[in-house]
Amino acid sequence: MKKTMAASLLESPFLSNRQLFSTTHHSFQPQKPIPIYYCVPFSRSSSACPLRLCAVGENVDSLALPPLAKVVAEDSVQDNRVSLERSKDRRKVVKLAWEKLVRWSRYWRSKAKTDVLERTKKVVVLGGGSFGTAIAAHVAHRKAELEINMLVRDPEVCQSINESHCNCKYFPEHKLPENVIATTDAKAALLCADFCFHAVPVQFSSSFLKGIADYVDPGLPFISLSKGLELNTLRMMSQIIPRALKNSRQPYVVLSGPSFALELMNKLPTAMVVASKDKKMANSVQQLLASRNMRINTSSDVTGVEIAGALKNVLAIAAGIVEGLNLGNNSMAALVAQGCSEIRWLGTKMGAKSTTLTGLSGTGDIMLTCFVNLSRNRTVGVRLGSGEKLDDILNSMNQVAEGVSTAGAVITLAQKYKVKMPVLTAVARIIDNELTPAKAVYELMNLPQVRFLKCMKSMEYHYNHIYILNLVVKVD
Picture 1 (tube, rainbow, N blue to C red):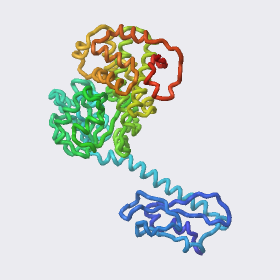
Picture 2 (picture 1 turned 60 degrees about the horizontal axis):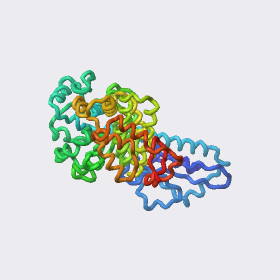
Picture 3 (picture 1 turned 30 degrees about the horizontal axis):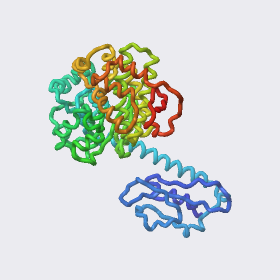
Picture 4 (picture 1 turned 90 degrees about the vertical axis):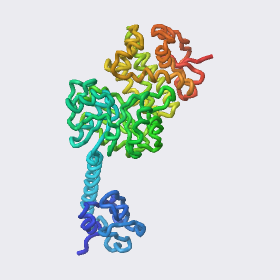
């Protein structure tokens, strides 16, 4: 008895070797032939993947098929086609073939997720600060065989990491994995690295990178952990790194989102965003970092993730000032809401997506930084509001508060993009000693009162309106 075409395809060597087969699921109508599809690789050199569906009768002369693939032409199987009324087993054949393709798809998806981690042998972290240390520890826990090199400048920190397996300056009570080692030798740290995490403060990044540029492989992916804007040039890290390394094609990814280094060290659940213009690179970093305690979302909006991460530090200083002045929860909520709007207005003018600015790396990071005492920038604001001098505050801190430097860029950006930003520019004026915190609050509260409300449908409103506490005020 002749086998049906579907059965013969299912038993072909190509399918039995790789368990690959698929058919379309049509509504079953008698007397109508059912087109059958089978999976074929794109090239002879491909062992199994990637595949495409090829219909019976399709011109396959141009396809490079493996020798085991049995190509069935439509003309040669006309006599073998059987209507479903005469072949009740067709449903089973179709179902079985579909299940095989689904199993194959799941297998390769799961395999792809582990490929990045499996083939990664060495990761370098530039900087020995709190967040760089936390990321180094997190990646080290992902795979015991990984070599994690931390490039640090402090010999004491380097010694404590290598001998005591702890960062004596930032996390003296947290033990680091044994596969985390520290060095002060840039050449040795970067040699044969698969990924590079950049955790150097923004204001020092350009000079630091120029000093190690000779040791950086042109194809080494850079993942930026630094949040802020370069004060003199207004550049973001996505612009600083390629310029400093003199390589406009240096693979670049930014990692951002609501995350405190201490909670990462304690392995508490955290969600972050990786953004890159290269989708495959973003997916690779996602696979490297994602774990039971770390959820990683991907994005292509590099500008949105970076500008939100930079400006939220300035807003956190403003929130701290409100706390230091004991102005209460009402004013805190109003100020943060206004600050969120200002960040969104400027960000969209700079090319960011509004969904990014209101998402995890935008609003999520703002909420964490403005309302939690672990925030360095919020702490600076609290102490400013309490009457302390900025120089005394900065000298007493062992970590960099990026919002202080970034605030200086806010006024220039607001003027450049013609956006009214009363809250964030007030922070810049306080830092420059043009205003006291109390006087800044007085000026904000005495801006023109709202005469009418209007939903903002166009960013052109920025040219002739002032925004006060999330409302729109017409300027005559």
